[in-house]
Image: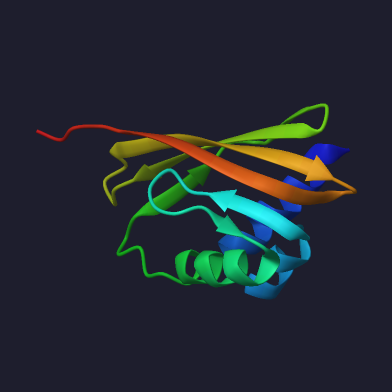
Length: 115
């Protein structure tokens, strides 16, 4: 099932297990974050993701929806919330799965204005 590799990827991300995250990716993976450059290749993507995975979020909570498989694509929704539970950013990651691994992670997000 294509969504299992994304489930494994997200579980590793939450554990801050960079090696396990990288094990879920193809060698020619492409990572296109919502903001910033697109990264190509496991080494380049690994460096970018490692910085994100190990970053101190300062009390911000990452909330993940269960991934939904659609053929060779998987959608994974997420949100960021403050320590008080206020959601200030929502997004969805679109994954392309090839040979049981993630070959593309394309991220989209919405930022809510705060009062």
